[in-house]
Amino acid sequence: METPRSVGEASTTNFVAARPSATTDDAVTKRGCGLANLRWVGLDKEELRRRLAMPEYLRLAMRDCIKRKDSTAIPDHLLLPGGAAADVAPHAPMVVFINPKSGGRHGPVLKERLQQLMTEEQVFDLTEVKPHEFVRYGLACLETIAAKGDECARECRERMRIMVAGGDGTVGWVLGCLGELHKDGKTHIPPVGVIPLGTGNDLSRSFSWGGSFPFAWRSAMKRTLHRATMGPVARLDSWKIVLSMPSGEVVDPPYSLKPSEETALDQALDAEGDVPPKAKSYEGVFYNYFSIGMDAQVAYGFHNLRNEKPYLAQGPFTNKIIYSSYSCTQGWFCTPCVSNPGLRLVFCSEDFWGLLIFYLLLC
Image 1 (spheres, one colour):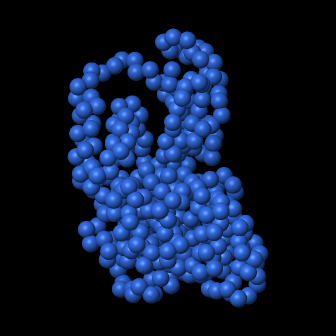
Image 2 (cartoon, one colour; image 1 turned 90 degrees about the vertical axis):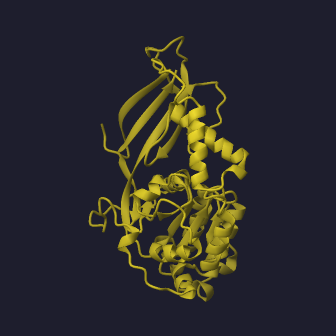
């Protein structure tokens, strides 16, 4: 069985990136160093802002490109030599993605606080700007300006770091979108840090970002952003998963799965009934674990319940109670084991960037 690909790089604060660096002498530890290893040194707001905030002309150019969904929609005066283009790149240019549905609906007030510490254009609400849009148009905008000879844009692109305020699913979503940069042959892939707003926050715990949203979060945000500017990069393994099912079925996949090409099914499969000739495939990436069967049903049901009745999601503790109750009602303690669940796992040792690929065939 192949070893999985190390797609991530996390920081000693800990940053998670979508691809390991090509060098072997990175300051990376197996486990990564935690937040406790970074001593807090008082830093005023203005100094923190200077470390994080990109020059205004770059922020506005990125904003316009994302809004117009065109990485070349940049006003001509921003491409002229000299002037604004002579600005100095910040020490750690950063953008933050916020999932407003996580963390007991802290999203709006957290967004406001982060905009005060950084800039308005560098904080994105995931309901308004999707990660793939930022990658496709925002980062590409910086590359376009850099290609015109703008050193500040080039340095901002190379030094870019990303923070994600959300749960494991939100972090995985952002990492998956950044992974597309590797497929496109990009060498500078922004590392990702976490502000834990989810229910479990297992990925955040693994990289020492913490397991829950801090009670004194206003002061904690300043400290977190400061530490995020200093954290080195550690590696994170990822796996690619391919889900195949008979063609013709109507499927509404989650954002974590993307449609793939149809494949022919092995007619010799040991399955009840006739095996369809074709299978529709969906593929995605996961980082710590994934759910199938009843576990996936519970997670998906909880996700839908939270979206339909947001007033029930008041915070991680309440979410855990609802999640536990939902698990019981879905049959964890009431359903007998089934000898033939109709699910076949085929492990394929396929050389795909060193990934271990799981093929799920629903017969």
